[in-house]
Length: 183
Length: 308
Image (cartoon, rainbow over all chains, first blue to last red; front, top):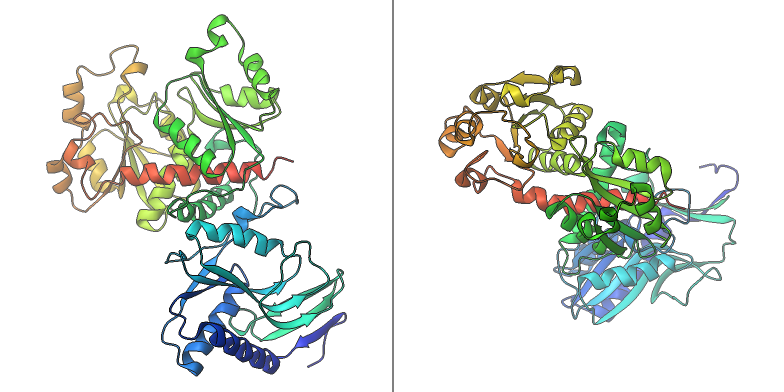
């Protein structure tokens, strides 16, 4: 497939699949049966990653049940009223308490770390977790504004600030591909 | 659309249909928030809101204050009965004095229609009208429509009858604007003396037979007889009003279909509705109160995001 100008494929569908399986295995290694672990995908795009991982863990590795939730961080962001646009929220769906649970926050791209900072605050509304880990599919290193690092990373990318990492999913965008785009 | 078309919430009249939808979508998220074990979000932590009430209110004021606190805003309360207004200060002076203390948003209830509009032209802050005389009460109408949407899935195409004192009711006027904007069919029902002349020009139908009105509607919004606003006798006795325009369980059960009963509160039990109706499964009165907090959080969040 030919690529539009200023856009290159960072990861293909096959590579994404391999990485997701590797991340699933790493989670499995640390959390075994997921009895005391919950996976929380950050809205909007972390929800795709968490649903894929949940599916892989259950179907390919025989994990019986995993508590999966979606967390929206809009009301916890630190850039409210600082941009031109009103920040619109997405649905939060966490049907369990995280009190004394191991929480794995899951997002697609880790960039400045500000979303994760907001998520760390937001998750407290659902109890006091035993510990919190972070899993991201793409880690844009050298671009952090806060001292936040992932425990599990899919691929590390040295993108410069003018570039954008775009993650496409079959269920939403019709293909599994990650692009690096010149802005 | 992701932002409101207005800077103030002065009345439903000034809103567009998309504004209402945006408020509802945002309220959905806040409704989830206020049902968590920790019900607070830090969104408005650098916003200060003054609640200025020149007229008595318990529920609306409490609901606004709770909504402000759940959004982490700083709140100052002011009621006219304990203030310099009694000493002869003008509205603009009162509010400007409060704004000098760096207040970003004003929630105001005032006995004079148009007080919020007047204020919005003279002061810098964002104004939310919490009721201005017999004019508008926009957040009440929003929470009423939101409750209908929650109960029946949609507001468009639904038949809604507003029963009672339409003449003096800001809830009725705001509701008419909101419901028409969303494509509902609206009837008003009450004693002729309490139905304004030319009310049909707002696109609503008039019905004076309560049973007919109830048989037509999906939702009945029962207004309170506001004795404090009735300067002359509009109907012979409260007892007679109740006989003609009060809803009791026998009447409710004899209808062709199951309708939803709403009431903006406070209820005069035994006057506009009986206790067994207010507490029946068809009544969503307490749901309206819960939704009020979510709606007011949504309105303040969306307006605050326009303060630079």
